[in-house]
Length: 126
Image (cartoon, rainbow, N blue to C red; front, side, top):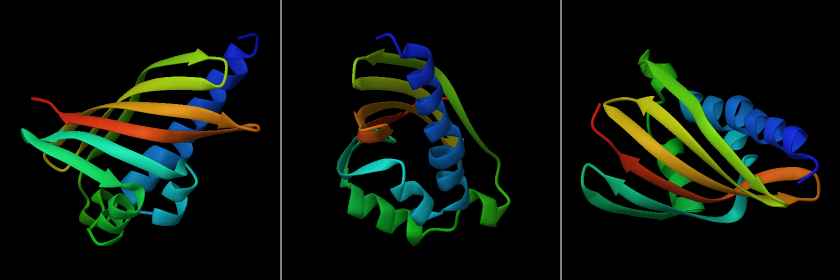
């Protein structure tokens, strides 16, 4: 845990400059750089169970109009980052369209690169 500050900054970099920007712009190529290839996504959206593979999720992003294209407001905020050796969890909040998502993103460090390995979301009341 001696590199906590460096690793925390690296995870924040992934979140701010790849993950949030990729969601906002609908940029699948950018988003692919934030995820491990076999990432799974779980949660609930408007009270309904949510499960997707990374390929299904990216296909949905690719085939929707992005918040940027629609001129819709978007915000992505990092609430917390917890790191233990080569694993981490980031708690973030994403507001887009009519959704306010609480997200828990599990990261793993591959070499010197932090990637999302699991994404859990819940649509919460605003």
